[in-house]
Length: 136
Image (cartoon, rainbow, N blue to C red; front, side, top):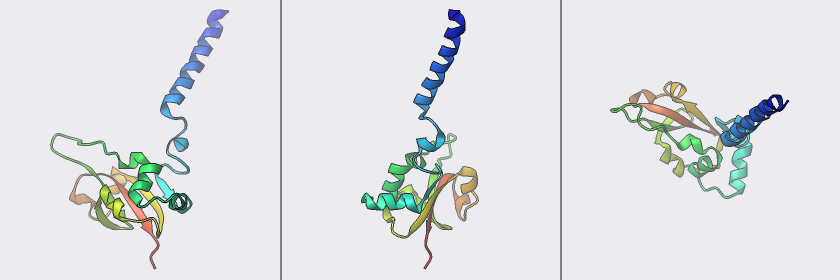
């Protein structure tokens, strides 16, 4: 009898341990909403909190967007690139120069999707952060 009860309890304990160390479900791990997108309502929360620039917003809301995997080979260095709508701005430090005022959304693109953006083929892009602003 103990063997039958012990095995399911061990499985449940293992499952709880895995969930605890992995941070639970995907949506909760990266904050509200989509883990690859930050929309205006969430941006407004950071405006109210006094967040001065987009770098700090991303650092607080989706920190994994800022972490690259480093070199993919011995010779090729990769980087995460920032775009303003469809215009390439440069490395992630460019986010420090952008305020939250006219931003409607931010999107994170993986390397495959980032490689399709204008100018991305000039380097080995690991990913991109696309800042969408209101065009007036």
